[in-house]
Amino acid sequence: MSQKLKWTLVAVVSIWAVALFVLLAKPKPTVVRNTPVTERIPTQISSRPSPAKTIEATPTISRSDGYLGSDSCQECHQDYHQSWHESYHRTMTQSVNPESVPASIVDGGLIEVNGESFRFLREGDDYFVELDDPIAGGRHLKRRLVLVTGSHHMQVFWYESGYDKTPAQLQIMYYIDGDRWIPRRSAFLRPPSMEKEHELGRWNSICSNCHSTQPRTRPPQRGEVAWDTRVAEFGITCEACHGPGEAHVEGHRLRAADPQLADFDDPIVNPAGLPTDLKSDMCGQCHGMMMISIADVEQREKYFEQGRQFRPGDQIEDAPFLQLVRASKEHRDTKAFREFDSHHGVMAGHFWPDGQLRVTGRDYSGMIESKCFQDGDLSCMSCHTMHQQDKTLQHEWKDDQLKPNMRTDRACLQCHPKYEALGSSHTHHPVGSEGSRCMNCHMPHTIYGILKSSRSHTISSPSVTTTLETGRPNACNLCHLDHTLEQTAKHLATWYDQPIPELTGHQKTTAASILQFLTGDAAQRALQVNAFQWKPAQEASGTDWLTLFLLLGMDDEYDAIRLIAERGYHTLPNATQFDYDFLQPMQRRGAVMGPQYMNVLRKKQKPNSALLIDQDGFFDRRRMEALMSRRDHTPIYLQE
Image (tube, rainbow, N blue to C red; front, side, top):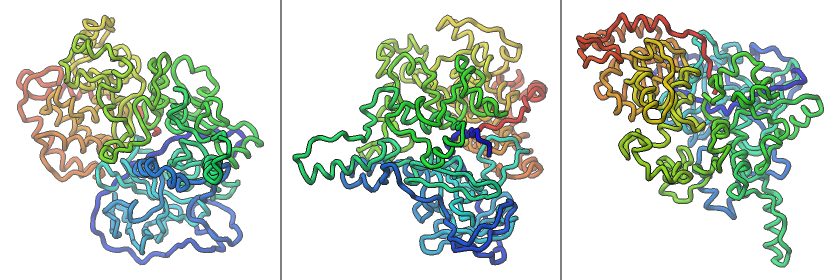
């Protein structure tokens, strides 16, 4: 390992899902348990033998520097502890048990995904998996499942590897939103030719940073494999947002024993009482585009021992070891950006060309580029709350931890009340319609991750010029899927005096959604396929014509796009059922999809040149083929 360490902290919230089949049992596997060993399990990884010792299956729970764990908060803060316990923050990483596994394997079961089989076994409250283990040279082994990361959209499982404190990642993931298992390589937007190797040490090196509290991790010595990782607690717990609790608990214990004692300087942090920027910095430690950069051996050792040392109430730009990466034009000359951009593909994997975020989970970095933050009082807590004490609201709240009414225009009107009175004179859409919603225009779905699009937290206004400069779809055309860029540009010019940019013939005559879907790169196609299934867009643009383009998405070369398109296809009111699975090989897909294509192409539609439907009411195959021949085949890997 070089002295200069540059690790991009990616808040990895993984996405996994799989097709469920009943299979023939494989031969009884070797059982690998968490017991003292005298030699390493044979693997494809070279490592030196180590002396006999007990091998720990997971990183160590080890508390220092005043951390006590969330149980210490419950006695005095039962209500807040309950609402935190209900949140997805708590279950960012947890032990594998009957409550944390999907229903499909709660009592064990056989899962086959893409020709690979995984037999899950339950023994009491412990779970095991039989698999052809990639870290053991493909040997058929029985491994104990020890950790699960994620519980909201997908779950990643980690199994006992035989290497101390270093769990291995299972090759398949449970995709909660789709109620199925999928290969982990299919969960990301990545080139089809890009193989995903085993990820031994991934949790230790990357996931621990934002899926545990007080992580401290030491990489393997040269020639070794095992990481030395310690955390105060798995998951995002009370002390991640309020700071270490030891002095707080001890101070109140002494006060309770002797009420005559003077008030003490309580170090616990109440985020609601912090200045606006510091409230958000607390979130930014995980929801920002952060990089760890350590310049010398002495600082490296301090980082390995104490971790990144950021504490709630600190300013993120002053935190040891952390560097906030900003990619907007005025930050391109910063040391942090130059180091970040020195890694091939990293810039394009995280940011649009103008520096806006394009991947999920970094909403702090999106927000701080907004004028509402830079010139106003916007913070993460303007809309979000980490506790919802009304239990009747907790089910909805836990989805994204928004305050009541923050899914509505009230989120924006709390700071911009004058726009409520302006109504349609400002939005140019009927009051109460989706086109009149603040967020649909100013926080469009241009962020990709976990197999869907989500709202940008860089608050901006629709601009065709920006679309042309960056390739990022604008809010108008993400809703009005049947409109051309020229139509949008003319409306924006009439309504808001925006200049009309120079447009090509295709941009004047072909719907922007179709143009980007047929000619764009994989990231643009992924956003458009998500837009095709967005209910407000379907209501504004109709659905009959969408069938063909979602079928084309189901035939895309990228696994993730095929999965998203399959999901979108089933949102169409007249979708027919046929024997399709996004994991099918190309030949099989062709056989089952051919008749579906023919049915759509033979069906007469309402003529609409922008939608490539000719005057006779049929799709113009020649125009479509011409556009598809212009497709951008640049390999895309969005690094969520």
